[in-house]
Image (tube, rainbow, N blue to C red; front, side, top):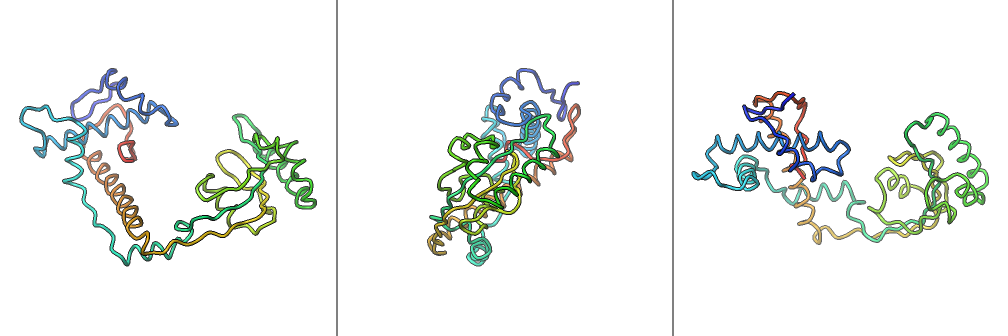
Amino acid sequence: MPVIINGYELTDADMERELPAHQDAPDAMKSAMTALVLRRVLLDEARQLGLQHDDGNQDEDALVDALLQQEVKVPVPGRDECLRQYQAYPDRFTVGELAEASHILFQVTPGVDLDALRKHAAVVLADVQENPALFAECAKANSNCPSSEVGGSLGQIGRGATVPEFERALFAAEPNSIIPQLVETRFGLHIIQLGRKVEGRLLPFDEIESRIAAAMHQASHDHAVRQYLQLLVGRASISGIDMPGADSPLVQ
């Protein structure tokens, strides 16, 4: 079924040009098609508002940028808003925090019996909790991570070096301990052993206020763009594709 947006039918050539930019997406075809639909909706709106040059030769990216600059405006957060963000999330503004970590990874792969994997991981967790000296041996025998060759050691880890679920569990744990529950991430189930911790330093607010303001402004702008896209999609004539929302590769 062809995809038609406000009377414009997307072509195979459109898809061929767009697809390379989406190869890292979980569903590259869907991601590329969504981007094409949203771009067409934005271009139609820009032209309807008279933003296109009379000769019709304005670059499409420039046209989309001009539309968003005109139609999507969000205020720059003030000092008080930035200070509340700073006080609410001190971990985000702490530097130099390190933790020595080892782990045993039970990887979740297609077709794996997740219940059986979880039960096995729980047995290994109980074993290393009872006898922490067995951790390296258990890592070599059970872990699906290359670190198994060195007893599961990941060395020193700083903030931002691992996936969020792993990081939260690691830095919330006490030094020289084994986290008493399995930690689940997109890689699988982890048993985590924490060694020494180096406390970080909270950056002074005045030193990073501008960075906080910029990050908050960008987040607000991205949210406003998504809302604007939802509005445009809702009033556009679109057939051949389901567009339940406006989460878009156009919004970085």
